Image 1: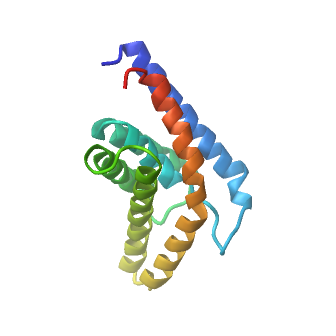
Image 2: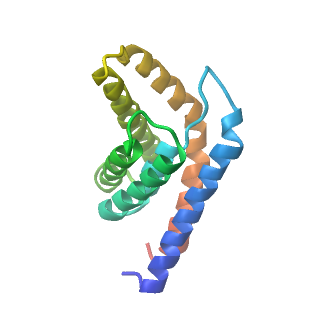
Length: 170
């Protein structure tokens, strides 16, 4: 068990890593368009750190990322990311603790689940408002995931470095 100061340091490093990714999203990735979509790192920030932490800690961090995204990004409904990202974090953490070891394959699988949850819920919200959303939403979700997939590697390396720095015994 980590001491109180070590725990504070750990979550500070995770928050700094997430802030760096959000800054890259806003400064660099917003200018890159491929297949009509831009890379979207936020689902990665909810899922990938959760693969390295316990289900409770991963879910809490994903909740914090969801709140930050709701404050920074437009969404179909209020608190959209706050509702979805904790589920993505929980699923990612459970995946890494029961099926796959944390790493690139686990991060890829967790990111795919996070995108499926995020875009699936967005389609559901649009569908509930009477708009035809499933086919177009699935197309956008697939293109968005494919454009974002190369970023899984640096994000995984970043959060793995934070985990190794804050858990030297693991």
